[in-house]
Length: 427
Image (cartoon, rainbow, N blue to C red; front, side, top):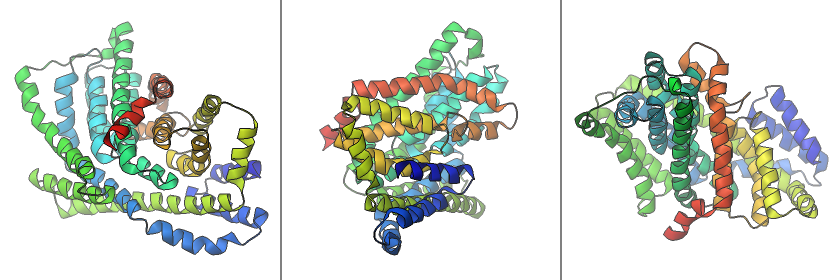
């Protein structure tokens, strides 16, 4: 049953059938083949109860927030500040890439939006100052993935919805790992440029006066971050309400920068509708598929099979990590998430792992999937922004950061408190 389901799903994805349609078809086929009752008759209730979940409303809100920030010109000002503060380090502007990505990720919640936005600003600078193109592009592709890990994160909302895990706790759990990951990325750049100084291009120097003056450019993203995340933990707003407040803050800042117009709003709304429609449709199909998998007993069967192998919890964890590493080479992150989390999360929780900790591990594994070929989405985003050259440059430059992410997974396994300490202190 499990093999048939997996082969059917991979076959449909290989035929380029849209992910939502593939999961819906798989649910209907499994229902016909293995269910004693016509589970498809409950699809209306599944779709309705899922689509009316108040938490899911935050997804289009966060997407719109990122679109408004992109079109309001905040990214250029943010990058300018990071360039002045981090340009003196070995690797120069590559540290600014990572710092700008981390900061923008803390407001947009989207890895793709982060990589595209910062890449648009940074790539001309890298070409102008003689940086190693592969490594420079790799910092943008890898830095963009921080949008998954640093709150607010759209993927954490989906994980929380699929596993009934507290989104505020997931957000708290992502703070420290997100900052540690950004530091590991910068350390990777510094080590590479220490051994190959030519890769670091021409270092940028700034006076302390210029640095202090540039701090004003960090205020808008910091303000939005404090409004969104602060309102959640102050008990003023739910994640959905906080996302709406973030959108209103972004509109106010866009008006302040005189970039607010009907054309800008229309473009942001159109892009939000396209992206949000795709995401919500995939989530609805995933819920129906999950309902069928539980109904036919496939989830329990998989859990029982793995438990019967007699593996220790850590051996099971290593197998799950390897599974995600391989799968991430062939599936887009959202599809991979909604098709696997309903299966792997109950398994890991039954082994005694904390669902919040496991959620952070999954976020790091999804980050890896964004920069591992042949389907690494951020690789194509950065290459698309670059508009020239070979995709192999982006792939080659991303390899050191894949290794850094594997190190991060090991670190989370050895020091689980990195993810669980902050939620435990707060709650």
